[in-house]
Image (cartoon, rainbow, N blue to C red; front, top):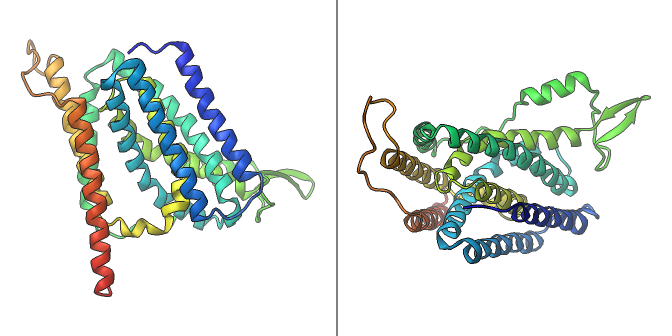
Length: 327
Protein backbone atom coordinates (compact mmCIF):
# COMPACT_ATOMS: atom_id res chain seq x y z
CA UNK A 1 0.00 0.00 0.00
CA UNK A 2 1.70 3.16 -1.22
CA UNK A 3 0.30 6.12 0.65
CA UNK A 4 0.99 9.46 -1.08
CA UNK A 5 2.02 12.50 0.93
CA UNK A 6 -1.31 14.22 0.27
CA UNK A 7 -3.15 11.34 1.98
CA UNK A 8 -1.02 11.72 5.12
CA UNK A 9 -1.52 15.50 5.12
CA UNK A 10 -5.27 15.23 4.49
CA UNK A 11 -5.67 12.71 7.32
CA UNK A 12 -3.65 14.77 9.79
CA UNK A 13 -5.43 18.00 8.83
CA UNK A 14 -8.80 16.28 9.17
CA UNK A 15 -7.91 15.02 12.64
CA UNK A 16 -6.68 18.46 13.67
CA UNK A 17 -9.93 20.01 12.39
CA UNK A 18 -11.98 17.55 14.45
CA UNK A 19 -9.95 18.29 17.56
CA UNK A 20 -10.23 22.04 16.98
CA UNK A 21 -14.00 21.76 16.52
CA UNK A 22 -14.23 19.73 19.72
CA UNK A 23 -12.13 22.29 21.59
CA UNK A 24 -14.12 25.27 20.32
CA UNK A 25 -17.60 23.77 20.73
CA UNK A 26 -17.20 21.86 23.98
CA UNK A 27 -14.34 23.55 25.80
CA UNK A 28 -15.05 27.22 25.11
CA UNK A 29 -17.55 27.12 27.98
CA UNK A 30 -16.32 24.70 30.68
CA UNK A 31 -19.20 22.56 31.89
CA UNK A 32 -20.10 19.06 32.99
CA UNK A 33 -20.45 16.89 29.90
CA UNK A 34 -23.89 15.25 29.87
CA UNK A 35 -24.62 11.72 28.71
CA UNK A 36 -26.59 13.01 25.71
CA UNK A 37 -23.74 15.32 24.67
CA UNK A 38 -21.14 12.58 25.09
CA UNK A 39 -23.33 10.19 23.11
CA UNK A 40 -23.57 12.60 20.19
CA UNK A 41 -19.80 13.09 20.12
CA UNK A 42 -19.12 9.34 20.34
CA UNK A 43 -21.53 8.86 17.42
CA UNK A 44 -19.70 11.56 15.45
CA UNK A 45 -16.29 9.98 15.96
CA UNK A 46 -17.63 6.51 15.11
CA UNK A 47 -19.14 7.96 11.93
CA UNK A 48 -15.85 9.65 11.02
CA UNK A 49 -13.98 6.36 11.49
CA UNK A 50 -16.57 4.58 9.33
CA UNK A 51 -16.24 7.19 6.57
CA UNK A 52 -12.44 6.90 6.71
CA UNK A 53 -12.71 3.12 6.38
CA UNK A 54 -15.03 3.47 3.38
CA UNK A 55 -12.56 5.87 1.74
CA UNK A 56 -9.80 3.31 2.28
CA UNK A 57 -12.07 0.72 0.65
CA UNK A 58 -12.70 2.94 -2.39
CA UNK A 59 -9.10 4.07 -2.82
CA UNK A 60 -7.09 1.03 -1.75
CA UNK A 61 -9.44 -1.95 -1.74
CA UNK A 62 -11.43 -4.12 0.63
CA UNK A 63 -8.41 -5.88 2.17
CA UNK A 64 -6.93 -2.68 3.57
CA UNK A 65 -10.37 -1.46 4.63
CA UNK A 66 -10.86 -4.72 6.52
CA UNK A 67 -7.49 -4.26 8.18
CA UNK A 68 -8.48 -0.76 9.27
CA UNK A 69 -11.84 -1.80 10.71
CA UNK A 70 -10.45 -4.83 12.55
CA UNK A 71 -7.56 -2.73 13.88
CA UNK A 72 -9.90 0.09 14.91
CA UNK A 73 -12.29 -2.19 16.78
CA UNK A 74 -9.38 -3.91 18.54
CA UNK A 75 -7.67 -0.65 19.48
CA UNK A 76 -10.90 0.97 20.65
CA UNK A 77 -11.70 -2.08 22.77
CA UNK A 78 -8.24 -2.15 24.32
CA UNK A 79 -8.53 1.60 24.95
CA UNK A 80 -11.67 1.06 27.02
CA UNK A 81 -9.37 -0.50 29.60
CA UNK A 82 -7.65 2.90 29.82
CA UNK A 83 -10.83 4.47 31.13
CA UNK A 84 -10.50 2.92 34.56
CA UNK A 85 -7.01 4.39 34.90
CA UNK A 86 -8.30 7.76 33.71
CA UNK A 87 -10.97 7.61 36.41
CA UNK A 88 -8.32 6.86 39.03
CA UNK A 89 -6.09 9.72 37.81
CA UNK A 90 -8.99 12.19 37.81
CA UNK A 91 -9.93 11.14 41.33
CA UNK A 92 -6.35 11.26 42.61
CA UNK A 93 -5.86 14.82 41.33
CA UNK A 94 -9.40 15.90 42.29
CA UNK A 95 -9.98 17.43 38.86
CA UNK A 96 -13.10 19.65 38.82
CA UNK A 97 -15.84 18.07 36.72
CA UNK A 98 -16.12 21.11 34.45
CA UNK A 99 -12.44 20.85 33.48
CA UNK A 100 -12.23 17.09 32.92
CA UNK A 101 -12.97 17.40 29.21
CA UNK A 102 -10.05 19.79 28.70
CA UNK A 103 -7.71 17.51 30.65
CA UNK A 104 -8.65 14.52 28.51
CA UNK A 105 -8.51 16.47 25.25
CA UNK A 106 -4.98 17.81 25.73
CA UNK A 107 -3.77 14.66 27.50
CA UNK A 108 -4.90 12.48 24.62
CA UNK A 109 -3.26 14.79 22.07
CA UNK A 110 0.00 14.25 23.98
CA UNK A 111 -0.68 10.50 24.03
CA UNK A 112 -1.24 10.47 20.26
CA UNK A 113 2.03 12.34 19.67
CA UNK A 114 3.92 9.84 21.82
CA UNK A 115 2.20 6.90 20.14
CA UNK A 116 3.16 8.30 16.72
CA UNK A 117 6.81 8.06 17.74
CA UNK A 118 6.31 4.42 18.77
CA UNK A 119 4.51 3.66 15.50
CA UNK A 120 7.32 5.16 13.41
CA UNK A 121 9.94 3.28 15.43
CA UNK A 122 7.94 0.06 15.11
CA UNK A 123 7.57 0.39 11.34
CA UNK A 124 11.32 0.97 10.93
CA UNK A 125 12.16 -2.06 13.08
CA UNK A 126 9.68 -4.24 11.19
CA UNK A 127 11.08 -3.20 7.80
CA UNK A 128 14.61 -4.16 8.88
CA UNK A 129 13.94 -7.09 11.19
CA UNK A 130 10.83 -9.00 10.18
CA UNK A 131 11.43 -11.63 12.85
CA UNK A 132 10.46 -9.03 15.47
CA UNK A 133 6.95 -10.40 14.95
CA UNK A 134 8.01 -13.48 16.91
CA UNK A 135 8.66 -11.17 19.85
CA UNK A 136 5.43 -9.22 19.26
CA UNK A 137 3.40 -12.42 19.10
CA UNK A 138 4.97 -13.89 22.24
CA UNK A 139 4.49 -10.60 24.11
CA UNK A 140 0.80 -10.41 23.17
CA UNK A 141 0.21 -14.01 24.25
CA UNK A 142 1.97 -13.34 27.56
CA UNK A 143 -0.08 -10.17 28.06
CA UNK A 144 -3.26 -12.11 27.31
CA UNK A 145 -2.29 -14.72 29.91
CA UNK A 146 -1.71 -12.07 32.57
CA UNK A 147 -4.95 -10.28 31.69
CA UNK A 148 -6.96 -13.49 31.88
CA UNK A 149 -5.49 -14.41 35.26
CA UNK A 150 -6.31 -11.04 36.80
CA UNK A 151 -9.77 -10.45 35.31
CA UNK A 152 -11.69 -11.23 38.51
CA UNK A 153 -9.31 -9.44 40.84
CA UNK A 154 -10.24 -5.96 42.11
CA UNK A 155 -8.50 -3.07 40.38
CA UNK A 156 -6.16 -0.86 42.35
CA UNK A 157 -7.84 2.44 43.17
CA UNK A 158 -4.65 4.31 43.99
CA UNK A 159 -2.40 6.19 41.62
CA UNK A 160 1.37 6.56 41.83
CA UNK A 161 3.02 9.35 39.87
CA UNK A 162 5.46 8.24 37.20
CA UNK A 163 9.03 9.44 36.79
CA UNK A 164 8.05 12.29 34.43
CA UNK A 165 5.70 13.82 37.00
CA UNK A 166 8.17 13.39 39.86
CA UNK A 167 10.81 15.17 37.77
CA UNK A 168 8.36 17.96 36.90
CA UNK A 169 7.59 18.59 40.58
CA UNK A 170 11.31 18.85 41.32
CA UNK A 171 12.13 21.42 38.63
CA UNK A 172 8.95 23.53 38.57
CA UNK A 173 6.86 24.88 41.48
CA UNK A 174 3.34 23.43 41.47
CA UNK A 175 0.44 25.29 43.09
CA UNK A 176 -1.70 23.46 45.62
CA UNK A 177 -5.00 24.43 44.02
CA UNK A 178 -6.47 24.77 40.54
CA UNK A 179 -6.66 28.21 38.92
CA UNK A 180 -9.59 27.67 36.60
CA UNK A 181 -8.38 25.98 33.41
CA UNK A 182 -4.98 27.69 33.49
CA UNK A 183 -1.83 25.57 33.41
CA UNK A 184 0.72 28.35 34.08
CA UNK A 185 0.38 31.11 36.66
CA UNK A 186 2.46 33.53 38.68
CA UNK A 187 2.42 32.44 42.31
CA UNK A 188 4.13 34.47 45.05
CA UNK A 189 6.09 36.41 42.47
CA UNK A 190 7.42 33.45 40.49
CA UNK A 191 6.28 31.35 37.59
CA UNK A 192 4.54 28.13 38.55
CA UNK A 193 2.36 25.43 37.06
CA UNK A 194 -1.02 24.30 38.35
CA UNK A 195 -2.28 20.75 38.99
CA UNK A 196 -4.09 21.13 35.63
CA UNK A 197 -0.80 20.73 33.75
CA UNK A 198 0.32 17.90 36.00
CA UNK A 199 -2.81 15.83 35.42
CA UNK A 200 -2.70 16.50 31.65
CA UNK A 201 0.84 15.12 31.52
CA UNK A 202 -0.26 12.22 33.74
CA UNK A 203 -2.98 11.25 31.26
CA UNK A 204 -0.67 11.56 28.26
CA UNK A 205 2.27 9.63 29.70
CA UNK A 206 0.23 6.94 31.46
CA UNK A 207 -1.31 6.02 28.10
CA UNK A 208 2.12 4.83 26.92
CA UNK A 209 1.82 1.79 29.18
CA UNK A 210 -1.28 0.71 27.26
CA UNK A 211 0.31 1.51 23.90
CA UNK A 212 3.02 -1.09 24.54
CA UNK A 213 0.53 -3.89 23.92
CA UNK A 214 -2.08 -2.18 21.73
CA UNK A 215 0.33 -0.98 19.02
CA UNK A 216 1.87 -4.46 18.47
CA UNK A 217 -1.69 -5.81 18.41
CA UNK A 218 -2.65 -3.44 15.59
CA UNK A 219 0.58 -4.25 13.72
CA UNK A 220 -0.59 -7.85 13.97
CA UNK A 221 -3.68 -6.92 11.94
CA UNK A 222 -2.06 -4.56 9.43
CA UNK A 223 1.55 -3.87 8.42
CA UNK A 224 0.71 -0.40 7.09
CA UNK A 225 2.05 2.45 9.32
CA UNK A 226 -0.57 4.78 7.82
CA UNK A 227 -3.41 2.52 8.94
CA UNK A 228 -1.82 1.91 12.35
CA UNK A 229 -1.60 5.68 12.88
CA UNK A 230 -5.20 6.23 11.72
CA UNK A 231 -6.48 3.42 13.95
CA UNK A 232 -4.77 4.91 17.01
CA UNK A 233 -5.90 8.44 16.18
CA UNK A 234 -9.58 7.58 15.76
CA UNK A 235 -9.60 5.32 18.81
CA UNK A 236 -7.98 7.91 21.09
CA UNK A 237 -10.11 10.79 19.80
CA UNK A 238 -13.34 8.96 20.56
CA UNK A 239 -12.04 7.66 23.87
CA UNK A 240 -12.46 10.83 25.92
CA UNK A 241 -16.13 11.17 25.00
CA UNK A 242 -16.57 7.47 25.79
CA UNK A 243 -15.13 8.31 29.22
CA UNK A 244 -18.14 10.52 29.96
CA UNK A 245 -20.59 8.12 28.32
CA UNK A 246 -19.72 4.84 30.04
CA UNK A 247 -17.37 5.92 32.83
CA UNK A 248 -19.92 4.89 35.43
CA UNK A 249 -20.74 1.64 33.63
CA UNK A 250 -17.26 0.13 33.51
CA UNK A 251 -17.97 -2.11 36.47
CA UNK A 252 -20.73 -3.79 34.42
CA UNK A 253 -18.27 -4.96 31.74
CA UNK A 254 -17.10 -7.75 34.02
CA UNK A 255 -15.85 -10.00 31.23
CA UNK A 256 -14.03 -7.26 29.30
CA UNK A 257 -10.54 -8.37 30.45
CA UNK A 258 -11.32 -11.93 29.36
CA UNK A 259 -12.55 -10.74 25.97
CA UNK A 260 -9.47 -8.59 25.47
CA UNK A 261 -7.27 -11.51 26.52
CA UNK A 262 -8.89 -13.68 23.83
CA UNK A 263 -8.27 -10.97 21.24
CA UNK A 264 -4.62 -10.54 22.21
CA UNK A 265 -4.13 -14.31 22.22
CA UNK A 266 -5.68 -14.57 18.75
CA UNK A 267 -3.59 -11.72 17.32
CA UNK A 268 -0.40 -13.08 18.90
CA UNK A 269 -1.02 -16.49 17.36
CA UNK A 270 -1.87 -14.84 14.01
CA UNK A 271 1.45 -12.97 14.05
CA UNK A 272 3.50 -16.06 14.79
CA UNK A 273 1.71 -18.10 12.09
CA UNK A 274 2.29 -15.38 9.51
CA UNK A 275 5.98 -15.05 10.23
CA UNK A 276 6.41 -18.84 10.20
CA UNK A 277 4.64 -18.97 6.84
CA UNK A 278 6.55 -16.15 5.13
CA UNK A 279 10.00 -16.07 6.74
CA UNK A 280 12.81 -18.51 7.28
CA UNK A 281 13.39 -19.69 10.83
CA UNK A 282 16.23 -17.60 12.29
CA UNK A 283 16.72 -20.00 15.18
CA UNK A 284 17.15 -23.10 12.95
CA UNK A 285 20.17 -22.96 10.56
CA UNK A 286 19.12 -23.58 6.97
CA UNK A 287 15.43 -23.93 7.81
CA UNK A 288 12.86 -22.36 5.53
CA UNK A 289 9.32 -21.13 6.14
CA UNK A 290 6.72 -23.64 7.27
CA UNK A 291 3.46 -24.54 5.46
CA UNK A 292 1.29 -23.30 8.32
CA UNK A 293 -2.18 -21.74 7.77
CA UNK A 294 -2.44 -17.96 7.56
CA UNK A 295 -5.41 -16.08 9.02
CA UNK A 296 -6.89 -13.66 6.49
CA UNK A 297 -8.24 -10.17 7.04
CA UNK A 298 -11.88 -11.25 6.74
CA UNK A 299 -11.47 -13.94 9.39
CA UNK A 300 -9.67 -11.48 11.67
CA UNK A 301 -12.50 -8.96 11.38
CA UNK A 302 -15.12 -11.63 12.11
CA UNK A 303 -13.20 -12.85 15.17
CA UNK A 304 -12.76 -9.32 16.54
CA UNK A 305 -16.44 -8.46 16.10
CA UNK A 306 -17.60 -11.82 17.42
CA UNK A 307 -15.43 -11.71 20.54
CA UNK A 308 -16.54 -8.17 21.37
CA UNK A 309 -20.24 -8.96 20.90
CA UNK A 310 -20.01 -12.07 23.08
CA UNK A 311 -17.99 -10.20 25.73
CA UNK A 312 -20.46 -7.32 26.01
CA UNK A 313 -23.53 -9.59 25.94
CA UNK A 314 -22.10 -11.94 28.58
CA UNK A 315 -21.04 -9.01 30.78
CA UNK A 316 -24.46 -7.38 30.67
CA UNK A 317 -26.15 -10.72 31.40
CA UNK A 318 -23.82 -11.32 34.35
CA UNK A 319 -24.43 -7.83 35.73
CA UNK A 320 -28.18 -8.24 35.35
CA UNK A 321 -28.10 -11.57 37.19
CA UNK A 322 -25.98 -10.09 39.98
CA UNK A 323 -28.39 -7.16 40.35
CA UNK A 324 -31.38 -9.52 40.41
CA UNK A 325 -29.87 -11.56 43.23
CA UNK A 326 -28.70 -8.47 45.12
CA UNK A 327 -24.96 -9.12 44.74
